[in-house]
Image (cartoon, rainbow, N blue to C red; front, side, top):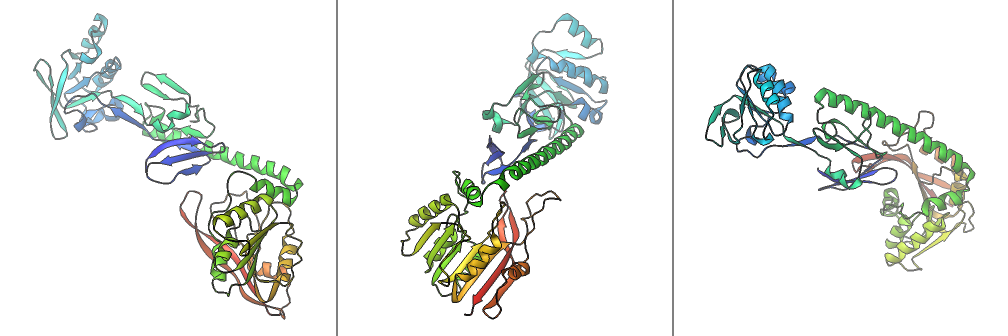
Length: 444
């Protein structure tokens, strides 16, 4: 796809594509090269890169000893002429576009046998990709085998223009300013190769890319540690209610808008009754249950999450008889044995939360013949990054079930397993993650 614009988002960048969804990232390396705007001479562009060339270092050897010419578009073309003279004794320079030259420059070029033609070039002649000559305004045709010309170099960075990043002027044009490692004046954007250095050939661009890649990686690793330290210093001192209220109090919704698949799969096979969703967040699962015939309730520790849940339920057209929400401590319940389905989905917390006590209390809320459904992370998502010393540990389904310590005379385990779930990663690519699923039926 093509990039239309890049915007900084505070902790990263957003890349807007021409035909696709925006992409969010923590850092961006721009390696989009440049465009050669050629002189508007008929027959020139059609042979660009074949027998119309730009760099004597890149292409001089291939045309050595042939009849060569320089179509000078600026004084830089005269420097071009001195370089190309190394490769041939038969060199012509067309000088119309640079205007009158001083006597010293003329003498210098002619001292090496270079022919100078001041009449403007009107057409490049050739057979297919091969240049055969040049016609000038005076009607004269100069027979040639190849032409060197310096195009106007235009870096492909228009998608960054609105960011007002620092730029620099040099004899080749106007380019993004970068440090020695390729970082621009933005802390999130690097630029390498011809988009910032018109003189960089392939090995130089590869080297710049390798250096920038290493520097960006180190910057992100450092940021990971900085964030971890900040969270470690702040999170343990926060009460669970304060932490989750802080998480939900921002302007962005945390719920994806989709019901958890395990909940919909299990509930679809049960007769609707009374349901309770623990840690309901913004109410997605409870709303789905209510819309599918259940008398649903949701409880969460965050008042902001409950407020959003109520708003979403109202927008879905649900009545108070169909669904209700409450903000309260998840570890204290007094509705024992009243629900036909109790669900707890991804009840994980980076701050201390009495998760085991909550889940055991949840079992007491299930009515005889009712079901308890616990869905948890079985492992970290494949795209998650962790230090080897700070990888989170998730209980296996068997460990989770054993921790509930429920009487086998009172409960039947219908599922204690890992289920793969299809999803998308943060960049919108298909991915699979594993869920731990425990489904129990209360017999009495």
